[in-house]
Image (cartoon, rainbow, N blue to C red; front, top):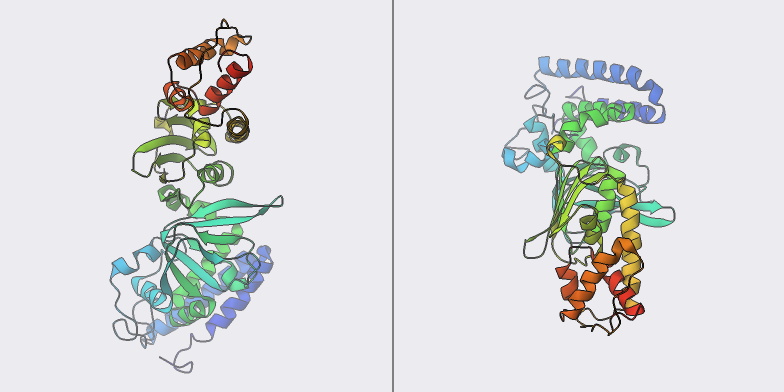
Length: 403
């Protein structure tokens, strides 16, 4: 490894970090500092290139040889880094240096990546899996986002070392690339290209242009997981209220059989289907159904114009109504209809019903009881969400229509 005396670029990292600290503290200085840093970095890199101090353009120094000091990793090994927003524009040799200095770890299910309040001294890139981000909102811990393959976590705080404001957890385990602050600084010293890229990235972040830069990548992101480790209601709530993504959520059971499909357009549910149910009935049933095993997959590369809109209710309104139905169904199951396999009998009383809107459906439910169907079979037979059927059965019992 070359010494500082042999490489004029050695002292640049300290200056870069000092300037970056000022950028973080005062956004108004971004353009001035960035211009100065880029100009200074270009001059140093040019000097090294002219003096033969860089092996290939702005890649690793000549004294750091790929294949000798750094393994000549095949492109497939660092493809996950190349797909990231942070490192995607780096040369292959620069990515090889990052991969060599950092470490890819296989983490178990439920692995805690970081916790609120702990100092940030590591940058993570998800190679395979999902990291769930949660923080305390209104006094309760809530999931606010999910990070998936080739997404980077901690690239901002690794420089400032400010404490984490959220928790990061890998519910289903996976593979994560770890790069500590010291390792990142070493990479920046070895490869000026990395220092320049990090500087540009921080400035763009602070200027608020990161949304534009990530538009293409976000369209390609895919969120998926196992329902044994993820709460489906929380996943849907996050897609609607926090991420506001556009795409189709596919849900399957543990035998890979389709269970549900939701089309979400920027935080609004436009279409839903669960078995024979569609629209609002399907959306509510997805929350009412106890699905503890299975998988979900959110596909974002869809054309909203090609999708049919069947629901015209704000996503948050649907969520609140679904939560209400969930609570009421739970109460009915614990207090009135405690056995889903019970077979009720029609009484001798003539059918009477006050509510004209639900009268026809109530009569269908009573007729199903008369046909000897159990509660479970009636739920499967009638094309309504589970709460609606249980609610009608409860009213029939209370009115003395069945017993």
